[in-house]
Length: 71
Image (cartoon, rainbow, N blue to C red; front, side, top):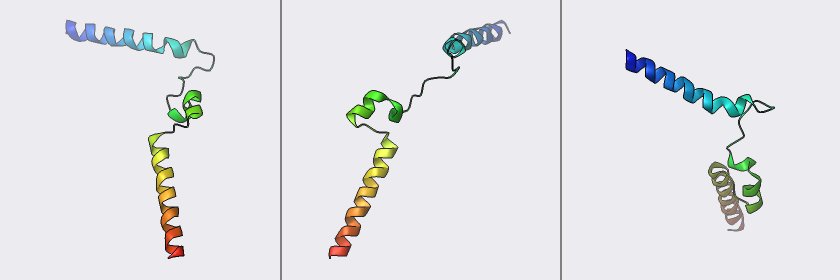
């Protein structure tokens, strides 16, 4: 029982330390971790892998449609 109590206290302390940044921020939220909202990544033209895949599929679909119209 003593070990469980120590583990619970340890988890509570860890959660409190992790939430310090959120508690003391003006907007009370975490910064976004998404690639599409990162200024540096935008400048380099890097997107989320899902967005890049969607874009590539759209381009491929358009190329196939153009080829069938020509041929």
